[in-house]
Every structure is written in C-alpha cells, then in structure tokens.
Amino acid sequence: MRHPSLLSPLDVRRLLSQQVICEEFPWGTGEDSLIEGHLKRVCAAVMRSTATMSRIEWGHYGSGYASFVDAWFYRETPDFDVARPVGPGQEHTGLVVLLSRLSPYFVFMEGEKSWHAHGGSYYLPEFEMLDRFRTQGVALLAAKAQTVLENHGLIRVRREQLEEALEPGLHVPTVLTSRGFTQFDALFYWED
Image (cartoon, rainbow, N blue to C red; front, side, top):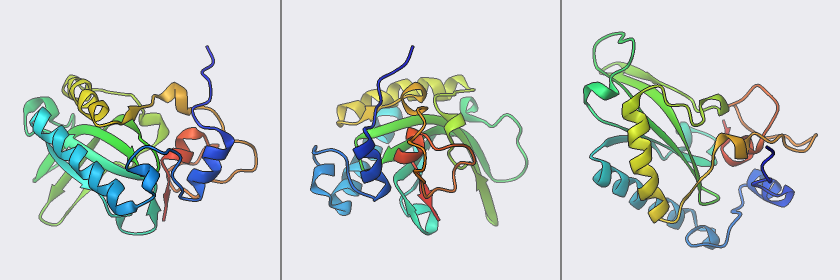
C-alpha cells in the first residue's frame, strides 16, 4: 500500500535550505536557541521517565550542519549490552532518536556506542536502521520514549513514510547516504 507523501515538494526545498516547515512552537519561531531548548527539555523528560542515561550530539557532529539532533538513550544493564564486546571501557546498545531541528518529526533506530579513556566508536544514522530493533531492551524503551516524545508535541515518522524518492535532480547535502535521496534524507541530513 502506498502512503501519501509526508513532505510536499515545498517542504523538501525548505528543509534543504535549513528552513523550518511548520508553524507550531518552537519551530514556527525559526529561533535555533528556542528549538534546541525545547529539544533539551524533551530529552531530559525521556531520561526521567525511562530511567535512562544519554549521549546526545547537539554540536552538528563537530562541524558542518546537521538538520537533526542525534539523541542516544541507554541503561547500564544486561539488556543494553552489545552483542560482541570488543574491549575495555563502556559498550552499550541503545535507542537512537533523531529529532528534526526543522520540524516536530522524529524517528527511532538502534545503535551501539563504546567509549574509553582514549576514544570510542559509534554509529552514524542511516535509512536502513529505521525502526529496526535487534534487542528487546531497546524495543521496550522505544515504546516508553514514544509516549514522552508525543506528549511534548513531537511526531514519530516511520520507514514507510520516508522511503519515497525525492524529485529527480534534487541534491541533499549529506554524507549519510550513498543511495538515491529519499524523504528521510531531506529531514535528516548532515552536511560536513
């Protein structure tokens, strides 16, 4: 069954120009500081409500522009252990929540992170990760987190809503894909 387009052609063009696509507060203000402040309060509420810890990328991965905040929630419990531990330090699987900076939309993924005194490793989000939960702990956390996120005015979008190809000739300034551009890429892109 074909889903109606989530994003209009105008929405896509606005997103690719780093412009908000909704009028709701705080996005409708166009003020980055208000939007980020709201998303910080939402992430704090998720942590409180789900008894999780987080590692959140607020700084555009250190360079360029990310149209989203990459929020990763986890617990230091066996249900968040990685499948194949590789060494000393912290290693966990967790719930990835990409929060659009330009709209109230968010998506879920599962991702692993590890860190120690000399560095670490982590996932980079990609379309293939959408709505895929390998571990029960992350799937259960997603269900609880979704309620909190939606209570703060955010809207979950799913893989089927984001797989539609963009118009031919449109280029998304992202390093997160090597396939044709989709509505996912218009909402969640990182220009390094």
